[in-house]
Length: 146
Image (cartoon, rainbow, N blue to C red; front, side, top):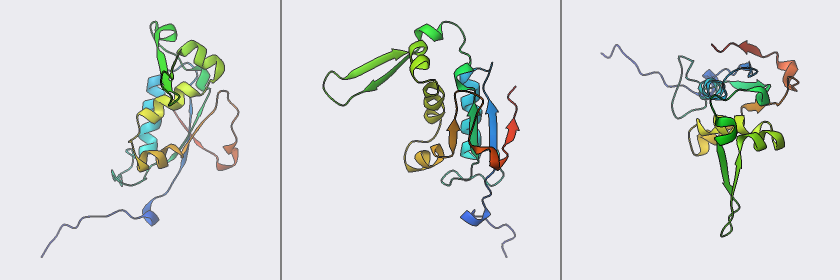
């Protein structure tokens, strides 16, 4: 007789909560790591690597996140147009002026798994440049980052 049974998580066992992270005055990487951890669901006992067991995350004040050292001027973001010679590069300072939420989104997305699961998890993320956000009705729980 087998005393131990393997527990398999199903979609009906997963409860999604909403969390809010205020990035003002915090390091961009620390905020991104915490958000990716929550999105992935690693804080739950029912964590399953191949399922979306994570919660929804709202990041506010993303443009006020800090970078240490000379990263504000030295950190370069690259993207490619798809055409020959189409590599575009911009530093953090200029990217924040043009698209204030982009560095936070790229940092969090880079910490999620690649493939269909990562794209599904990324849809549970909301990033806002200031402290105003649309999901007030869901009453998100505030997360403190040390």
